[in-house]
Amino acid sequence: MEVVEAVGLGKRFGLDWGLRNVTLSLSEGLHVLMGPNGSGKTTFLKLVVGLLRPTTGYVKVFGLDPRKDFSLLSKKVSFMFEGLPLPWWMSGEEFAELVFSTRESSPMAAELASSLAVKAYWRKLPLAYSSGMKKRLQLTIALGCEAELYVLDEPFTLLDSASLSKVLSAVRELSLKGKTLLVATHFLPEGFMDMASSIIKFHNGMIVEFQRLEAT
Ligand SMILES: Nc1ncnc2c1ncn2[C@@H]1O[C@H](COP(=O)(O)OP(=O)(O)OP(=O)(O)O)[C@@H](O)[C@H]1O
Image (cartoon, rainbow, N blue to C red; front, side, top):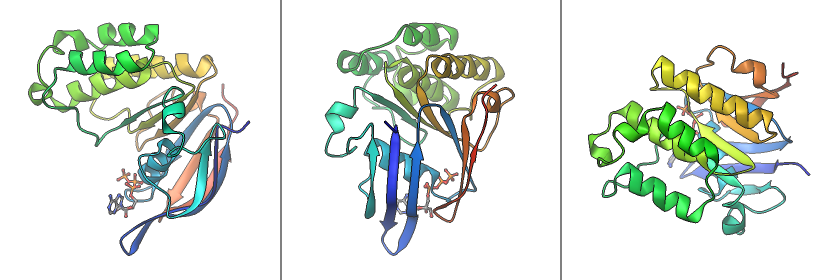
């Protein structure tokens, strides 16, 4: 079964289309979404995880509707969007505990909390975090959930080089385990594209190029 299947998928915001008539099938693997600012990558990913409702067409994930079957899919899909805020009234640790009380955590959660040094600050409220600290916590939670599909919007920005290399190792580990990853990024860290199964290029809310690659 395809992991993601979109047919005629579109999203309009007021008079403007954020995504237009996307038809695409993605099987297991690491898929890299690229394209200029405002080209529709985040909109596509939000439709895939059910954070947005399509205006036209549909998207299915593991054969299910991300909005109607949200609770079934929430066990199979983990995601991270740069713009989604952390709850300001909870410490990072409390938030992680809340997520992992409803989602199964993998050993990677503890590994990342330690290797990204998240434990050094996660007793504080997110207001006290730098952008990179927020990112490290969000990645620990998103990559630390057991899932079949990981949707990551700009996972590599704001990280120092040591953190970036730990996150790349985590992505490689998930990829080697046969998990599917959809990663929107402007930045291609060294070694990242070696793992990729495809590059999907967006422009003006449309897919303008789909390139299959041989992962090395
Ligand atoms: N909530 C929203 N309300 C109105 N317009 C939106 C909204 N979200 C996205 N858009 C518009 O949809 C288009 C696609 O935006 P999107 O965030 O998907 O682009 P992107 O490729 O992820 O960009 P970036 O590389 O800057 O993250 C843009 O024109 C944007 O202004």
